[in-house]
Image 1 (cartoon, rainbow, N blue to C red):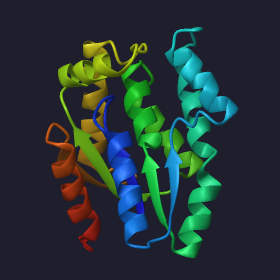
Image 2: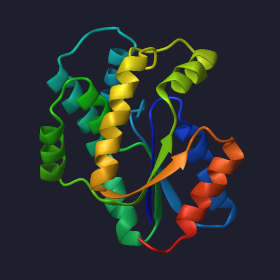
Image 3: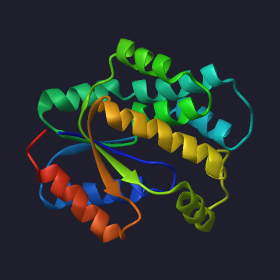
Image 4: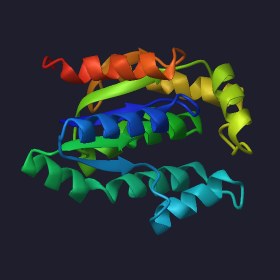
Length: 199
């Protein structure tokens, strides 16, 4: 099963991805884990430098930079699918589409490029739904905010482009989870979604 955990900054995707990994380990289920952006790769490092305002890029360059980061995991996903191994992806190209469309990249063009590249469809895309205001509050407690995390108006736009993808069930079946609930409640709901064999 290919599972993607999505949501705006502060939604809890890192926490929930970690809990899901522990759940699979506890139940002796094999899995591979993917995170986007990947700080361990040069392209991921370049994107984080952009986020931390070390330099500016135009919209097209940022979209392609993010897409390249996700592309680097295609072979890992294909190998896992071929072997029947679970995949947990903390964010995916769906995140790139939401954020970079909010950043000014054409939404329809983003979807066309994604289809042309041939990104794998996920079995279940779990969208952790929180308000932009709560996103900023959560992030302020954790660290210095990057160019996206500090901007409520921008995060509102990001949510709008997530909603468009949810409506289309783009790149997989989407499941909305209230990310404002407790960590334990969110995890339980995710497990229920994963256990549900219906597509």
